[in-house]
Length: 371
Image 1 (cartoon, rainbow, N blue to C red):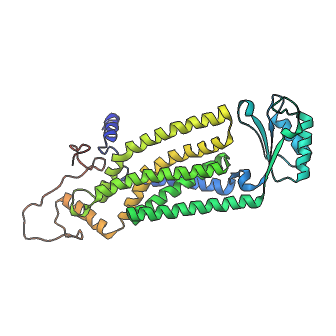
Image 2: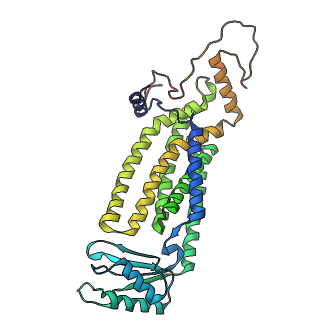
Image 3: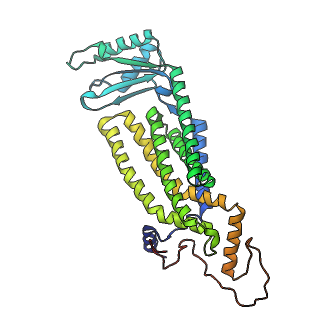
């Protein structure tokens, strides 16, 4: 089959790709990525923002005479503490220079303010030099610890509610598969942040919860189609559970891709605005985690969730027996309800069913909307 024909069948939902049949490939790819992410988290760790780690942040209006290296040196000479980060944020008249460090005493803050004023003469809105324009804020380590514990609690509640909802709405196996996919999403996003060294802020956590919800929504849509396709599947020996599930993924994959593209475009635009136009760190943190998460969430909902579901289902006796009956029917054998061969005195040839192409379980004549 040509690439054009495959794309057409994917676009029309005719079952152009064997997502479920190649699940071992997706498991292998995911396993490698997850291992790399775990290693990055363990050995490199996260770059925590001041809200999680605690510390002091000082800022002053930005001007052309401000040099980040010079500001960092002046700050260190005044406080005896190395600046963890010096960055310019904002745009236009609201542009400021921020200095982050570990928690400082009041005396250190006053000395830093005095030395920064003497060295760079920052000006207020009226254009007058004033030490009062140099602001500061301090977050205690205990506050950072409280924020971290609340974040972990929010994630735990999120996962519990997800499992309960999908179990009640669908079934337990689907809940387990969805949880596995979302767990991979969280690990991959966290691993990328650790690997690249991106700062983790409250906006990052908000963005992570948002993309986990996005991934869950996409997964639920696929599972809803799987539930529809597999209703009463034991009563027919034309297709296995895996083939029904694969068809469901094919019928929803274009929707998943379209949703991802539509979601990624405004997120990318937000990144451009945040980084190059406004320099707003909060927007950058939010948009970065959302972009990574949307891409990973689409992968997990298409290539992981349903294959994991099929793997779980294939462990059940009724599905195993049904798979045997389907295979026997295709080979022209007589089998009982447990899929075992049955001897018969009736020597009439058994009715055979043509094998089903996993990439097109509904047959060549099937079209969306026709059954």
